[in-house]
Length: 70
Image 1 (cartoon, one colour):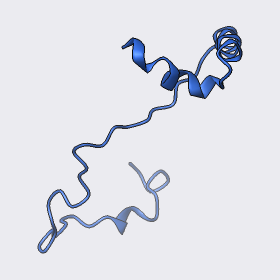
Image 2 (cartoon, helix red, strand yellow):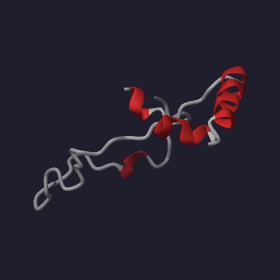
Image 3 (tube, one colour):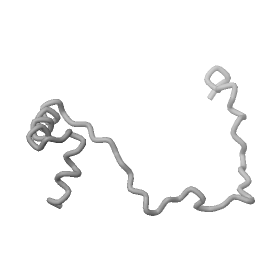
Image 4 (spheres, helix red, strand yellow):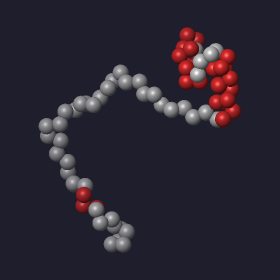
């Protein structure tokens, strides 16, 4: 990198980080079940809404209603 492309804040990061006194795994949550978003195509989402209306629930309530199938 030359002077024109080197950011002026390049010296903000220390060369070495001292982790003395740190606790390993402090924020670890082994039983955590992540809830990831699912993005559906409009056609699939419309179909899901039709099914939800037939079951008298919302589209977000369908997984709970259908959990017994698993």
